[in-house]
Amino acid sequence: MNNRKPRDAGNGLLAASFTENTILAITRPHPQFGMVEVTGAREFSEEHDRGIEAQVRAYRAHLASDSSAALQLFSDTPVTLEADANTAGAGLAWTARSAGALSVRFHGRLQRPPYAEITDIEPPQPLPQDTTFEVDGPVLTLRSAALSADATITVSSPTDSVGWAEVAGGYECQAPSGPPTELSLSLELHVNGGLRAPRGGTYVVPVTTGTLADRASQAARAYALGCCALDITEDATCVVTDHRLLPLSWTRDAYFIVLPLLLHGTPGSVEEDVLRCHLNWLFGPARAEGSWMRSHLTGGQVKDPGLQADQQLYPVLELVDFRRRFGLWPSTDLTHWQRGITAAFKDLVVSPRTGLLVSEENPADDPAEYPHNFSTQVLFSEVLSRLGDVADELGLDGADLSRQAGAVREQSKALFRVDTGSGGTAYAYEIDGNDGYRLYADANDLPTALAAAWGFCSPDDAAWRTTMTAAFDPAGPYALAGAFGGLGSVHTGGVWALGLVQELIFARATDDDERDKRVLNTLEELLSEDGMLPETADPETGEWLSRHWFGWPGAALACVLSSNDLRPQPGLH
Image (tube, rainbow, N blue to C red; front, side):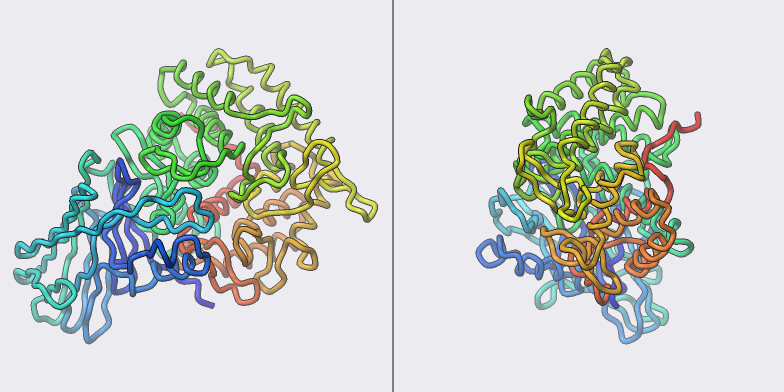
């Protein structure tokens, strides 16, 4: 089984991926285009790749391979390439070493990432490829007028001066003769109108050791702070779902990516600062065009429209969790947060007949078959409940919000409960509030698994147990059988890491030790050497199938392994 992936490093402004002898790409936020990157990947074809699932997946796999590298090291002996966690200045740095001759070759360009989505609603308009190059001794400079961006790649050696030379297809730098030989590489990437310096140090997602909880926690924190939480301005930070394949922001994904910071950050910590800036972004640039949509560019612009009810709730939940964890609101302007919550709730579509939330799309980014989604109602009740505890501080009616939470909870349990046809009941995935319903389970619907932990229902609720048991039954229609089997999604084939996380939540809520042990073993085998999880894997072999970079599942696992209910508790002052 091959579950290795490229290593990652970032400083909250620049994020990069690298392997033993390559630097694949370095990327950063762009105020207009979302992201800009230095890459050696082949161009994504709007004609032959866009909208064709097999081609999109092939392109994503290409981005994880050495063939996409912007910088590649060559030697007649093994090479070591280490990212520098103590980089000073605005760039990211690496040191390459070899016992023999050593050289580095650049082949690449500046570009906006293609945002290679499977369910693309509004593809970005193509931009011209206009990268120009300039060599000044050890400094190779790339410029793009179309992107208003420039990058510098600086090489150095501890033994002698070095410089770039043009070669066929790119540029090359030879290390002074050794042995041993050593080259240091420093990369900076700037855009007009963007920040010039990062917030602090570099986070290298480590090759992890220790328990599963330790490994998942280390990776989740480093990847969130270094590569996902990207600073847009001095006081606004966007959280992308990953920095390589889909560097876009879904409020759902972002909430779970930062949840480890909410669970473990302490007052005055970098976690608190990043979360404050993320909330500034959510209730600022990301609301500039109205409701939170399916996905946003880092500048806050809507990338893919599509109103998903749960994505109007996660920012409010993060705001309330911030207040609970750190004992204060992100700023002293309480009117700003009151207005933000009020505006978010005005965007919610509540059926006057059922009292339940309506959504155009479900949490898997697919069109809803029926208007009411069960997991979204579970989330709605939880948000209302947590908000009710602190709402009075913002001039909102906490008692009324708590009453609404109970009403949503009881109405949902009444309307979603359906006959399974075998003498029992279950909660439908979607309903229309009349007789129409859909029985289904999806790995993206974490609130359904959290229903008992959140007090939406009892762990002994027969309908909930039936719902969850059916979700993980390999003989049923939703889970996949195999040594690495588990819940999947019609959105993407394979067993989903998020589906396994759901099963772990269920096992712990029902004290099912046998299931708990089995799922933990599966997750540990699927984990990469740097503590990350993919979107999907082959249920028979465990081979990663899609998305080598995906911040959500690893972060969710880290949370489940450290908290029974995923509710942040007050931090110590």
